[in-house]
Amino acid sequence: MKYPRILAALALLALGAGAVTAAEQPAEPSPVAQTSRLNRIVAIVNEGIIVSSELDAAVATVTAQLRDKGTQLPARSVLERQVLERLVVEKLQLQLAETNGMSIDDSTLNNEVQDLARRNNISVTEFRAVIERDGFSYETFREDLRKQLLIQELRRQMVGSRIRVTDQEVDNLMAMLKASGSGDVEYHLAHILIAIPEAASPEQVQAAEQHAREVLQRLRAGADFSELAIAESDSQTALEGGDMGWRSIGQMPELFVEPLKTLQTGETSDLIRSPGGFHIIKLLEKRGDERHIMRQTHVRHILLKEDDLHSDADNRIRIKQLELRLRSGEDFATLARSNSQDTLSAAKGGDLGWLGPGDTVPDFENAMNKLAPGEISEPVKTRFGWHLIQVQGYRDHDDTVEFERNRVKNLIRTRKYDEELFLWLRRLRDEAYVEFRVDEN
Image (tube, rainbow, N blue to C red; front, side, top):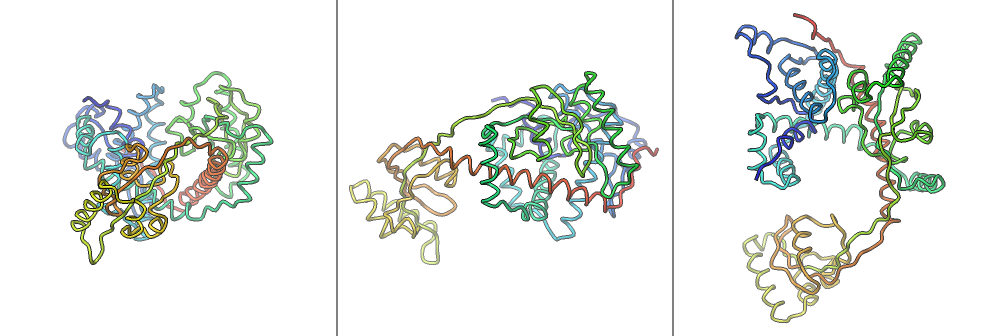
């Protein structure tokens, strides 16, 4: 089976990995020049440094991404500036994580690699082969992945853990969406930010506004939005051409809501002022207003867990014996009450009620989905222990109201997280010592 080259590239690019393929390598310089280039410091970040080899690798990765998307590449100096700024912010986060004693162990890293492979429907061995076939170093990939997981955990602790969404906020947004008739409508947006520093002087604000107006004029004259975002935007999505993905009204920054109401698909907004700077948004696409129907399974089970009295091997024998008793006609509910170690469901004859997709662990769900009503599974092993599963029925359940409420809650959380992350990263950057040396020979 052949897997496309983009598989490995996307896996790396999605994580911001700094790998470079052989195809992207520049012409081989002399050994002396090569050593000088590889060891040249391009930025000092607090007590750390970024060297030119890191910058070259990251630029090559972003270049491959932009070419895959068919985006016109900006000048090398412009791309280097954007990529180097992203590397600086990444370095600052890794330094803070180290200061706080945070790390990602090999077990967590291995689980993430397995999950990446599973999402691409291949084994870990095949996943590694795809990466190496396209010229990427698998070990470099793993270490870049470790860094990104560490940054994710740092952001979770520093930003995500402080985000709270109240029932009243959910009620208010649902009422607003219902009143506006835009409840399930989603918008695909692109975004350019011309940022201003905290406590900016009037001169700095004026300069940023002038810059933003010049960018807007170029867009009005027909310039490509994604190319200008890459070249000019200070947003975290700059290197994605400003693409913010699909957002509902409740998920996007509040200051975008009013301007968006008058935009048609393909149109660009006027300047939008915020404390962080001047924004320009473009409406790329629009969709929505659908009901949510979920397939649910009524299921019961018997669970045997490993403990001081029973090893995993013992439980494997015991669960097989229970299976034989069930297949000989004994009552499932009776056996569950007397044998299952899931105490909550055991009291109900093993009944877990109606389960939707994702309500249980994958191994259990996969085995459950293969059963016809009334059918009993073979013993199934999950991280909880050994199970016997019986499906009692299936139904299509319209959970649009519950789904919409959960969706709105997640939209509010995402919006708050994005806003807080932007402010936190800006403070982290503003308070750091950063010295660029990219133009030095």
